[in-house]
Image: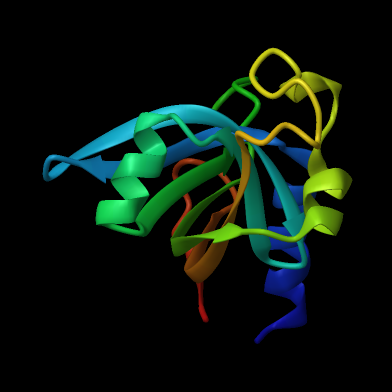
Length: 139
């Protein structure tokens, strides 16, 4: 793995917390905005147990994520991430990633409906800007 590419990927995922998560629902893609966290290149997102995305990933754990591009133009870097999702049960990680931005959906890190989803990436595609060729990292 190129350290230069990894550093570019980490810069995007660490500095752009809101992105889209696409799941498959009834054989069609379904996207929604989510708040993402990371540990190295592994991504996490919080959700409530009673959501359609949980139903979707129980049927098909494959997801696609877009992060980056602040919409200040077409020259912002962004990443596309393909991966699989599993539920992360670690109380420590749930506490680490819960924050005030989530309280409209998840009142506290102790909420019994709070689920942390762990996205294990199979590939990252890094785009320096919208017209650039992607740099690909397969994991």
